[in-house]
Length: 47
Picture 1 (cartoon, helix red, strand yellow):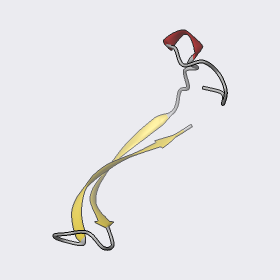
Picture 2 (cartoon, helix red, strand yellow; picture 1 turned 30 degrees about the horizontal axis):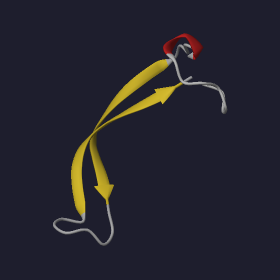
Picture 3 (cartoon, helix red, strand yellow; picture 1 turned 90 degrees about the vertical axis):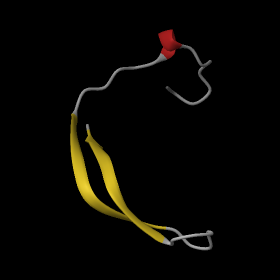
Picture 4 (cartoon, one colour; picture 1 turned 45 degrees about the horizontal axis):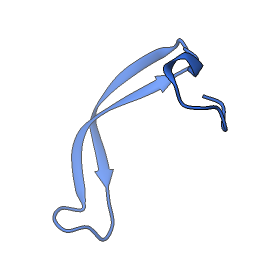
């Protein structure tokens, strides 16, 4: 949605593109309790 547009479903635009499912993605975080890294999955979108 364009900035400043009132939020509603009718004001949304639809985009088409492709998506890729990535495995073994390493997530890193700083200054958090617990593990600082995790390995998981991610979606990447292309327009």
